[in-house]
Length: 169
Image (cartoon, rainbow, N blue to C red; front, side):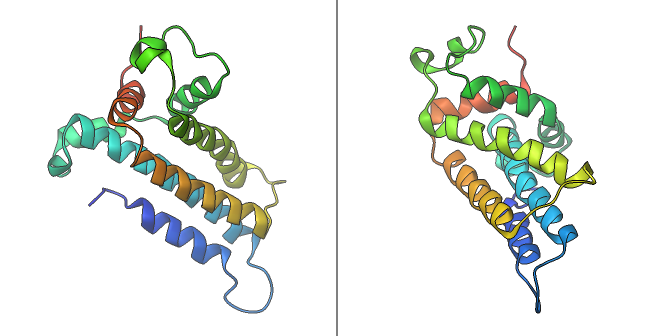
């Protein structure tokens, strides 16, 4: 069981975006839904990285927590932005087969690159306004990214997760 279950965050996002009564949900609900969707992806990546490095059976240990907490928001965004560029940075090519990024990994990176600024706006921008369509899109994209994370080829997954924790030099 993940430290924070991404599915629970997506369920929460869906619940927040679903009207409980007449009228649309409040902006606070939409904003929290966007934030929860981003965090679902973030925690799925952090869990995968710690599971890969330390082991899923070690989630109760300090070593696991250290690996989990090593995934930083800014580093995740920076890596994902680099993975979606037309030409991959030379310092990343050695970590991927023939220097090519798996298309599903590119999609995950694209979703993270899109979600993080939306989460920042939802959490901090007083002028930000979300619509039901925005929130539905964000939740669907987050679900898709998590599904892809669990099915990308092992070599691409390991490279991505390692690059999340270790800075290539």
